[in-house]
Amino acid sequence: MNREHENGAIRNRVARARVHQASGRRRLLWALAGLAALAAVGGGGVWTGFHLAREAAPDPGVAETPIPEPGQAEPPAAEPASGPAQSAGRGPERLHETSDPEPGRVEPPPAEPASGPAYSAGRGPERSHETSASEPGRVEPPPAEPAPRPGRAAGHPPEPASGPAPPADPAGQAPSGPAQVEEALRRLEDTLKPASTAGSPLSEHRTALERIALGKAKALEAYRDGDAGSALRLLAAAQREADDVAREEEARYRLSLRAAKDDYAAGNPEAARMHIAQALERRPGSAEAKAWEARISRLPELLAERRKAEDARGAGKLREERAALRRIVELDPDDAGARGRIRAVERQMRERAFERVIAQGRQAVEGKHPEQAKQAAAEAHRRRPGHEDTRQLRAQVAALERTLNRDRRLAEAEQAAVRDDWEAALRAFEEAGAIEPAHDGAAKGSELAARIVTVQRAVDGFLARPERLGSPEVAGAARETLREAKAMVSLSARLKTGAEALEQAIEAGRTPVPVRILSDGRTEIGIRGVGRVGRTGERTIELRPGDYVFEGKRPGYRSKLVRVAVTAGGGAPVEVRIVCDERS
Image 1 (tube, rainbow, N blue to C red):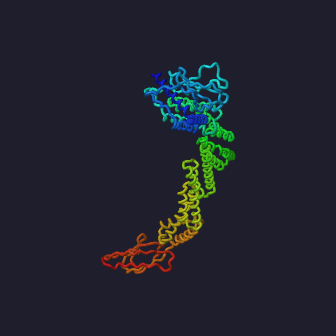
Image 2 (cartoon, rainbow, N blue to C red; image 1 turned 45 degrees about the vertical axis):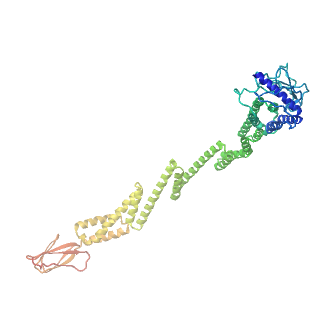
Image 3 (tube, rainbow, N blue to C red; image 1 turned 120 degrees about the vertical axis):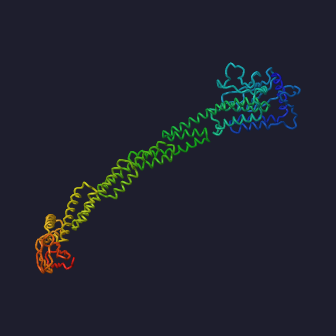
C-alpha cells in the first residue's frame, strides 16, 4: 500500500513539473514567494510568502495535467520533468526531481554555493534530504560526511527535509489541510512576534532565525506541492526552534528586568536605566517594563526625598521626616518600609503631643489655673483614656478643684467673720470642711464660729425675756452664758454688745420692783411660787423681775388667777387688781 502511494506521489510530482515548465509566470511568483518568506523573520513576512504561494495559480491558457487525490484513478505516467524548480527562500539554490530508487528524494544541483539569505555568515551552502518512506516526516542529516563543511558550525542542527512524505493514514493521524497549515504558521508568527517587534533580528539569534526562515520556506514549497502533511512537519520543526528562541529571549528579558529592579532597590539610577532599556529593547510593548521605566525615572527624586527623611530623623524633626516619607510613598507606592516608618513617626508624634499635653496640664495644676488644667486633662483623656499619666493628671485636676473650692469657702468664712456675721462664717467653714475634712483651718474655724453663734443665740434668748432673770435658776444660766460671751467678745462686736446688755439684765433681775395690789378686802390673795399676801384692799410689795401668777380665793365664789410680768428698771409700780366676785 505504501509503495502504491509512493508511485502516486511520483506521478503527481512529474505532472506538476510539466505545469511548472509550461508556466514561466507561475515559477516567477513562486520564487518571489520563497524569497519573501526567507527574508521575513517573524512578523508579517510569513503571511506575505504564504499568501503569495496560495495566489500563484496556473495561467488560464496553459493546460495542466490533473493531479488525482489518493485513492482516485491515476493519469498516464509521464516522463519526469527536467526543468528547474525554485526552492522557496533558498536564493539561487535549485532543487531537482530525480528518478533514483528513493521516490521523492530531492538533491541539490552541482552548482556554486549561493550567497542568498538562506546562508548565514560563515555557514556555506546547506542541503536538504528526505528520509526513506519507512518513517514519514522524519528529518535526517545529509549522508555521512567525513567532516563538517567549511564555514558550517559544528553541531549545527540539520535542515528539515523538503520532499513530500507519504500520505498520512486516515485512521492513525490527525487530518492536515490549509486550515492546519495556516494555524501552524500563525502560531509560529506569534512565537516570533516579541523578537520581531523589537526591531531587526538580534545577532545572537540570527543563525536560528535563518534556520526557522528556511524551514518556513520549505514548508511553503511542500504546501504548494499539495503536501500539507510535510508542510506541517516542517513547521513543527521550525516551531520547536522558535520556542527555544522565544524562551531564550524571555530569559534575557527577565534577566534585564531583574537587574533593573535590583539596581532600583540598590539606589543606582544609571544602571537601572540601562537595564530597563535593555528589557524594553527585547519587549517594547511590555507593560511591566514600562511601569518600571516610569518608576526608575523617578528614582533620583526618590533618593533625594530619602536623604531628606534621614536628615530629619537624625535631627528629631518628625514633621519634616513625615512629609519626606509621604512624598516617598507618592513616588514609590510599593515602598513598604516608608509606609511602616510613617506609622512609626506618627506614633512618635502622637507620643510627643500627648507628653506636651500632660506637661501643660501639670504646669496648670501647679499654677492653680483650673480651666487650663481641665482642658489639658480632657485632651489627654481624648488621646489616651487609659494611660496612667492621664489618670494622674485628671486626679490632680480634681484635687486642684477641691482645693480651690475649699479655699473659696475659707475665704468666704473669713470675710463673714470680719463682717461679724458668724452665722455665714459657720456655714462657709462647714462647707470647706465637707470638701476637705482633714483641713485643720476649716475644722478650727468651724469650731470657733459654732461657739460664737451658740453664745450669741443664748444671749439673745436671755435678753428677749429679761423678766425671767429674776428666777435664780434662769439668772444662774444667764451668768454662765455671760462668762462664755466675755471670753469671745474680742472676736465679735455684736456678742460684746449682747454680753453687756445681759450683764445689766442680770443685775436688774436681782433688784426688786414695787408691785401695788388692789382687792376688796374679802378675797384671799397669794402668789404662786412666792408666798401669801392675804386679804387687803390695797398693798404694795416688791418682787424681782419675772413672771408671776397671782391667785384670789373667797368662799362661795369662784377663784381668780392673774398673770403679771414684772420687768426691771420700771418707773411706776406695777399694779395688780384681783377680786373674787363671781359666785360658784
